[in-house]
Amino acid sequence: MDINVILDELKALATPEHFAKLSHFGIKDSKALGVKVPHLRLLGKKIGKNHELALQLWATNIHEARILASIIEDPKLVSEKQFDDWVTDFDSWDMCDVCVDLLAKTPFVF
Image 1 (cartoon, helix red, strand yellow):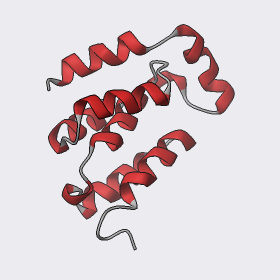
Image 2 (image 1 turned 90 degrees about the vertical axis):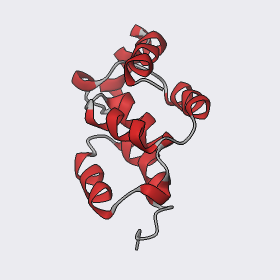
Image 3 (image 1 turned 180 degrees about the vertical axis):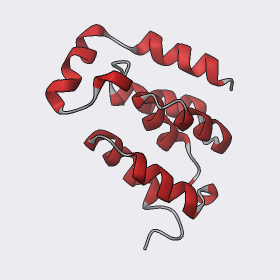
């Protein structure tokens, strides 16, 4: 799948109502679109596991794109450097919550 198509889908899923709630929950809205996590999970199921696309999504620095990246990333293909880099980039509790599911499945989590 093309990253631009995915970014367009994320923008289409965003709502002003959800965007307005982000700061209330302590999420920096300067990098966010306003997409609910359940919508990201459904999109992730549609996309399937895709290591290269996950890396591209993370590189966008868009809040929801990073959450989606952790949903579609293949834990078998995550490197220790990628693991460390992603953890360093966490800037909200919801990103941490979703990414921990992925990182817990990597062979070097301990």
